[in-house]
Image (cartoon, rainbow, N blue to C red):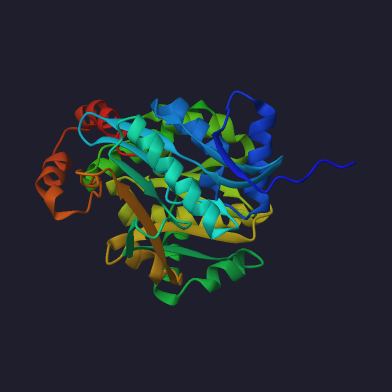
Length: 353
């Protein structure tokens, strides 16, 4: 006689030390169409690279995995403690077919937050319990299909932006792609200078190293050089036949060389050659410079909805670098000598999540 099928949902924390369990969750994420930030690999890279623990919640009925909530436990002396789905990403949130299961996972996250003295739970996407705070209208994502060849890709870019790309193509620039030590050093030097110029602290290089090491062929670096000097560089993620340029930037000199424009066009071409069919330009703050830049490239903004829960008697943490309350700090950071910014930045940034 067959054993009865259980319809009772149970929730437990994932064992990231069990490779079979990790593989099971990876399959679930793929089957449910989850983002790269839902992958256990992402949580593991964040943990290795920043010291913020991976805390994944699995909802099961019998032997069936039916819900998943990837969380990073972010701790900071400056910004407090929070559970974030997903840490250092722009996506995440609950993966579940049933609304009731999504709510169960949210309640479980609240309980863990209280036990670990975290004041906030943040979900970057998905769904949440009805009583959670909804945050929308602040960010949008940009994504579009790749063209069939290099020429068509260039023509797919609107006229004004295409003219900038052509200038970058005409300049004496070279392109390298890889993930070895030389590529990593070049990328970090460019990225660190870029974010300092924007007034924000740089992430620890160990985070980038961990992502490249754990993701393997699903991540790489593309760098644009002028006479061997890195001008613009981007670390990209590959997931579900889509490339996402995630951590990228350029030096001041990159601007007049149009190295950033060259970089993104070269990445589109490279990604198509490796089998990708879609380009995910990522998230930008509504009304910001990057928001306008991506629209000028012909990408349509897709509004993003986030959710937060705060423990009773506490307020949600604020780590939005564009918030007016940080304007004076941003102005000061822009003036810091690069060596000082690179020394202090990782200590601050690993607590942002």
